[in-house]
Length: 441
Image 1 (tube, one colour):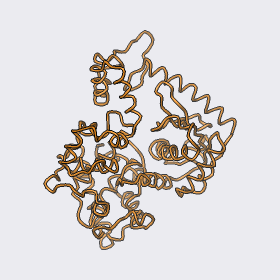
Image 2 (cartoon, rainbow, N blue to C red):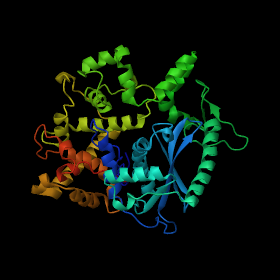
Image 3 (spheres, rainbow, N blue to C red):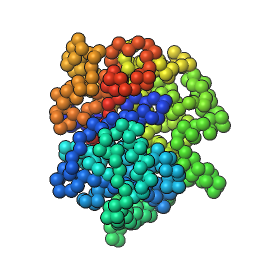
């Protein structure tokens, strides 16, 4: 958690209240993206604010990425995709796999590098059919009209993207071969990095990087040390290509530990979505790293998404949301906790960071009540901006949105039990709870 003098952690566009329908994450991203102002030139005023994007494959990692380039400044960004061989899929499938990472890249990273924040003025890609299908997808998501037009086939932009990618690909190959696993730094002339003494598969530039990477590397390291069968390695690689829920659906029936824990938590198997599993693990105090591995496997391709979901569910559980709150309405209308034994509702104690987050959320609730007075039940997204600008200042107000959403969603706003906000997605009363976006620390 940042110090008091620093703006709080920015909201992640894929965070917020998770539902069992993935499209709401896309809606969050679209809402966040549309809130970012646009300018014809990037913040330095010297370069056109046009971006060119292409799907590329990193051979050394056997993974597809989205390569996003500003041809005028030659600035670039790489967004990892959770699927590979995307270019072989039908155009409509490609769009479904690319549109969310594209919006995420701008909401969470690219736009936040500009002062003030700035969304693209225009963008384009290489293939005409892909551009048209992407434009249709943007229109369906109600992205602002100017960005529902996607140009294609600009030879100069294509050439620049290819040049930048060629250089980047060589760097990625080199990093994969001889770079530090944590910070990606390359050794200087005559310098060699120390390999992990356990697995001998990765190397680090310093003890600090090795310690910082241990949580992520630990399980892989242990597996390599005990693995002698090539078949076992193939199995691990196969698991690495699965998202967490797919892994769960395929493996729950052959995993006695999962069945035992699920019975204890009152969770029916197979669970219908990752959110259902994570929420049940959190509210019963069973959201440990070992249990995550049991349910979702060692290398879920959406691991970051699952961890973000756990962080948000932990805050919601620790807030002990009141009856009449948005969170309470969501949980009752979706039967999130159906079957959970009452005696099992016991989330783990808050960590130091979580305690600071909870204090911040509670202070925001006090500010919201003072600002709104008798109008509390009629609070809108415009009120949110006023409150955050007053609290964090005009330059940093968007950085408080993550905690503001938690503060608002856990307050009693008079929602009846069983009220389903998902039935009223475009209603102002619902939209005020799903506003997201902003800047990352």
